[in-house]
Amino acid sequence: MVPNAPQESLDALQGRRFSFYPAIRGIEHNEWTMHDSTWSEVQVRNCMTGQEFWIPKRHLGGVSSSDSPVLILGLQRELEFKVGGLFPYRSRVTEMPSTPAAREPPAAPVPEPKQRLLSGSDARLVRLLAIAIGAGLLVSVIGFLGLVGRLHNPLDRWLQPDTSTVDQRYIGLGTTDSYFEIVAKLDRPESEEWISGEEDEIQFQALFYPARRYIVVLMGSTRGDMRYLGTLHDPTRQVLDSAQFSRGGDTGSMMRNLPEF
Image (tube, rainbow, N blue to C red; front, side):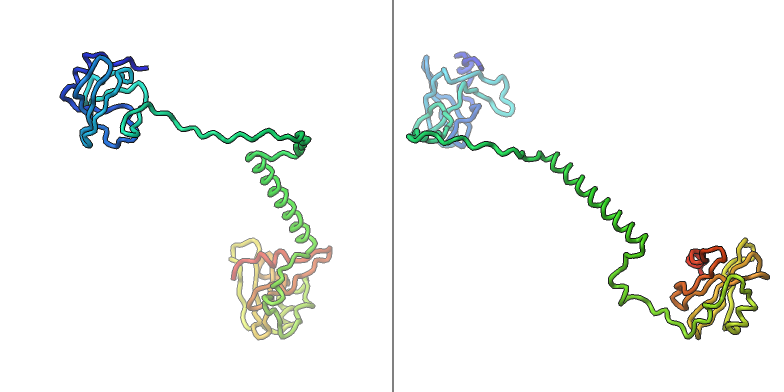
């Protein structure tokens, strides 16, 4: 606690303005001057309102050594202005009214539920685990349906592109059919295009039949030895036919990964 202000410190306040710390409650302007004193009290006047009060010296603390930015006179306890005077401030404590004792015997205590609430971190962890488990199940279901070929877009029925052709004479072609055999069976194409470079190890050739809405693709190690690979729809470039290998399997994956043309 700050010691009481000695008389010589209070004498130094004569003719000077100062502020109380803490400020007196109920008085907005905290700037004062000292006008008189006795052995037990000092008289102060508010510089703005002109109010004058006598304050017991036991409530006064020390005086600041500097007046920058303002001279301070400490208070040993907080004061409050009310009913025309200064009084020690007491905080208001609202007491809850007591409940009269019940005459009836107290009811049996209700057992606490065994289930406890999860803390914030526990609830977050449970939520993340549930999301992870749900995502894992969804991926598993999608993968399973994709493997068995049962996963279809419900809009595919209406959005499926038209892959119809004028004829399906390409179905009779196989991996042993050369360029000349294909031309003999399907007639000469309206145009031809090499879809690989001359230096490439594998050569690809496209025979265009636009009136029939398909493109016949050939493959070979050299351009002089080309064999039937499959047929694409023109213009969607979807695979219509894949050549079957004698030992099983077909050229479907190769047809889906052709060089762009």
